[in-house]
Image (tube, rainbow, N blue to C red; front, side, top):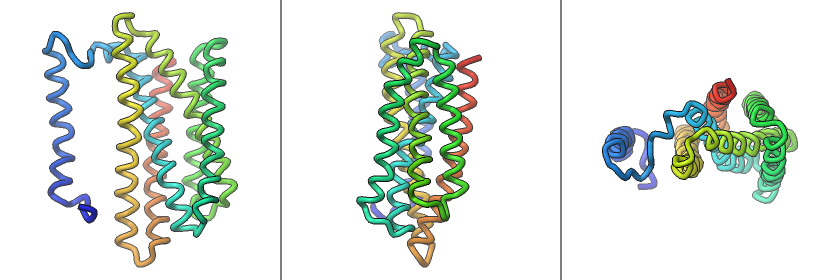
Length: 238
């Protein structure tokens, strides 16, 4: 099983099965009188665009947390302790921004936090993608911190504003949807990133070169995700 690749029949069947079972779930939920998740919540644009923005944000953060240590250790030769220090700076920034985002929302509403989050996400990811080949570890740590500021701003503001847009009886379903989204997004992001990086590692004569090549592709995909994040944020604030 550890040698399964993207072309493996079992993997292909699972990838085909995902949209099929998702459509079946939607069909059943729309017909049952007591659904597990009331899909009426997605008829509210602010909530829908907000949860899409949160999905993008929650895809990027765990993917970076998985990929960066692998890149730093396998491609740059950094020891595990130092690579952990690079990530810890971002975790601290994310925790602080989460607290400050709540105060900002209470005083100014959702616009400042969502806008700041989108700018920090774009700046952090795009600059990491541009300089990933030869960027110093301290610069990488700073850019990761900048991205993690967006994590606290985007999730808190979109979740609070999105739930506020729902009818009161739908708020529990909206809260459940946000929780499902945040957990599912990270899992999918790590799965795709690990598949891409391992594919390049296998096809390369040198594991360091393969890891770097895979990291570049993953960062390019994350750049696209961050662009989508900003588009959804714009739609929330319209």
